Image 1 (spheres, helix red, strand yellow):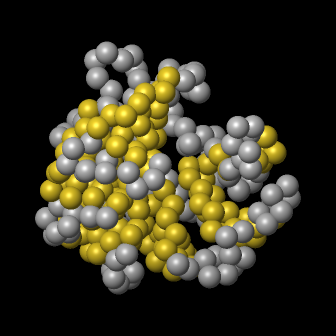
Image 2 (tube, rainbow, N blue to C red):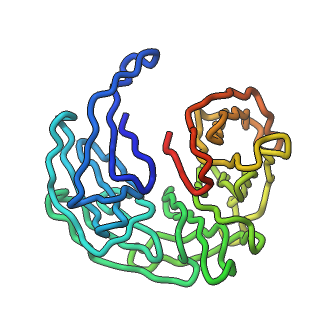
Length: 274
């Protein structure tokens, strides 16, 4: 397991072969190529790291987990979110940067795409011919979910969106999950929104799920969401995990809450990756 906290310069590796006894393997730091890790993705034996200090997107061979080998980097790329689609890596922030990774030791930035709806991307996912983004732009005018037709990588076309209410919070750690024809995303710091995009030209809100209500700490916010399997959703708030059954997307039910002390800071703009 490879873990890093956003905007930190340290990456940690754990052996999880025995899930009841996690073993720390090593920490990895390289100030030349990543001063602050924004996002990273693993593809085979290659690790791609996005950085927001040096503005590098770098590639590393991690076939030997104890001895990572630097391969290459692309400069002037602010990579808040990274998504891999075949031999193409898309690094997103204020625009979309398309990088050919067919040869990880020779990365090639071949296109940069800008659009008002791109704004400041909080998360992006590519499934099939569609790219799903959550972004903030233009004084909240474009805050929300956007779906793009990616059948032509040279010309991404926005085909639908569901905008959020202006002033819906900073959404520093908004995330997107995609399952079948539904998109799950942290609509604000307290709620999760589920959008039906079966008609991608007209995505519609299916449900807004309140996770953190007034009974919780005022500074407790949604920090991470993830699918456990096809039927269960995990939501991490820093103080607890919420487990939901979404086998029926129209009627999601809370199954269990696990209290924990994994997160100790009260800073509302921090984000953990789990």
